[in-house]
Image 1 (cartoon, rainbow, N blue to C red):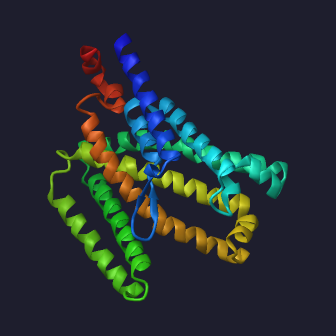
Image 2 (image 1 turned 180 degrees about the horizontal axis):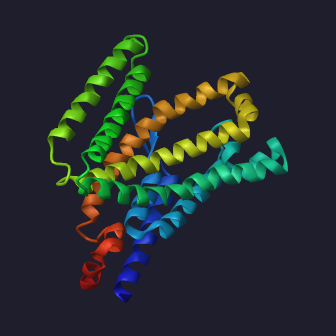
Length: 285
């Protein structure tokens, strides 16, 4: 037990160091032709899965802290104030401090909590006998892939492919994935699928909570910073969610699945330990 606690402490320190390195170097971003996909949230997601939601929340706090520091010391965009209480004070006064604290920290802390429970839910559905639950899981994966392919093509080839063509291609790709998942035995791949959904959930949690927070708390200030009309802010935010958010979620799903499966050879998932795998962890210690 003592060795297990020491191991978890070391793993927490390792994930923390990775977050800091990613946040302050280009390693935290993957260039995808038209955007740089953020992957700083991935160590937070993995921390939630292997260390539990409490330590995951701590790693999310670290993620938020690095964002606060980055946007305060080296604001790269005109909208950096939404992540910096210091800069927000100049824009919105005292209320701006609390608004930016929420946007900077709450979504990131939730990134360290939500994936854990999503993993447990998907594992339960995948292991169960409910065909409806399995179909729902497959359908969600197919819809996400459809949205990602469509958004990526529309951003990458706006003058070549029409919205209708991008939609058709996305539907075909999504349908193929649905067929493959339905034909396969979901029980055998339940761990892989659960890890993928945990990655998707973590990335979407960050995107949705940050962008909705900006819309609710900073609509006018954000519009001014972006140089758009107030009524156009929702379109800008939906564009970020539909493209950047989907692409980052797919990237997170792929990396979390790959790294997660590799790490399970060294340490069992915290979720497994909670459901009966602690004996294995104790035996390993």
